[in-house]
Image 1 (tube, rainbow, N blue to C red):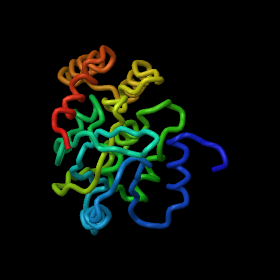
Image 2 (cartoon, one colour):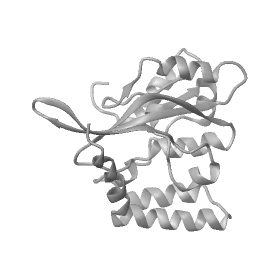
Image 3 (tube, rainbow, N blue to C red):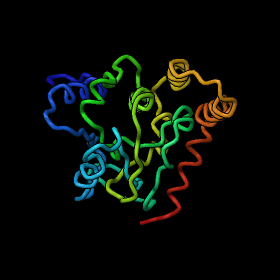
Length: 207
């Protein structure tokens, strides 16, 4: 694109033009291990799940004029086994770890280009209503966080975190009392800044 169209729109352009049976997404600051695509393809071969996600390493980095510098590494982060109730509360599968069947993703409608961010989580919620997900045991990617943004995507500055979370929750209502309570707790953690404090603990394990 000659001008930026935003993350969701850019991904949707890729989805529209893709010719393969499986889609993966790699942001410019994350990294795949050499076996990532092979592992994902193996998991989705045949009559398997519609979506899989792998274990990852979380890397805290500093970016300056001299380049990128690894500061800390939390090895082999294993996202929880797939749970739709947990997904209704928060996203816990970084995009870099995904593999999704192209036909399922297209049927789901791709990324929402209207919401300001958290479009990956919103997509997973729609996908999970129709198809199964699978957690993979192998570490296949690095999810990288900048030193000034040690948080998850929900905590990023410059976004309407509260409004976007409420919109996603409203689109995915739940009568489960545990989910309702967990949503309130998670919102408080994010909006109060306590989630970012907890995420910063990865800095204790220096490279």
